[in-house]
Every structure is written in structure tokens, then in C-alpha cells.
Image 1: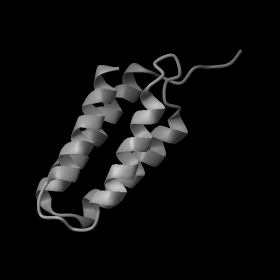
Image 2 (image 1 turned 90 degrees about the vertical axis):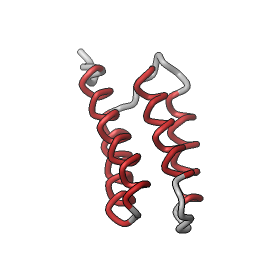
Image 3 (image 1 turned 30 degrees about the horizontal axis):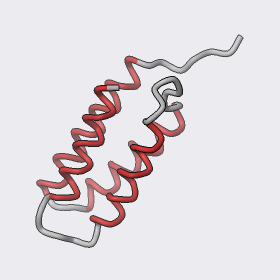
Image 4 (image 1 turned 180 degrees about the vertical axis):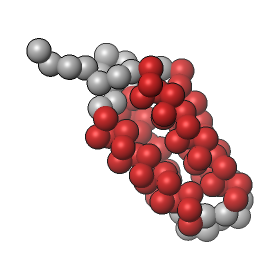
Length: 92
């Protein structure tokens, strides 16, 4: 769970990074949605959710200023770590 908290912390840092560009509201919704999904440790994020979140973070990072992008890229790295630590469960 620590890694997901760090992801959320990076999203919050990205929101707070000046200058305001109009992306803050979108990032705020994304952070709130992400945090709500991670509140239940017994239900890890599924691969599809991780992929969609990583895609959104990449798209925003590519279009924003350097300081904000740095936090978003770090959030993506942390999601990679999370995925490596929590491989998808196989149903048998």
C-alpha cells in the first residue's frame, strides 16, 4: 500500500506545481478517483486500471510543464513498481 500512497502523493505534488495551467482540476479528479480505488487493500488494482492510469499520466506529462511532468513520470514509475509487486491473480 505504501507505493500507492506515494503515487497519490506525486499526483498531489503535480497538482500543486506552479504555474496553473488548467490541468489541475483534471489531475484532482484523477487523484481522487485513484485514491478511492486504492482504499481497499484486499482488492489490488487490476492490470487494465493500471494501464489506463499510466496512459493518462503519460498523456498529461507530455503536454505539461517540466516540474509537473517530473511528478507525473515519478507516479508512473511507482505504478510500475506496484505492478511488479502485485502480479495479476490467475483464476483456476
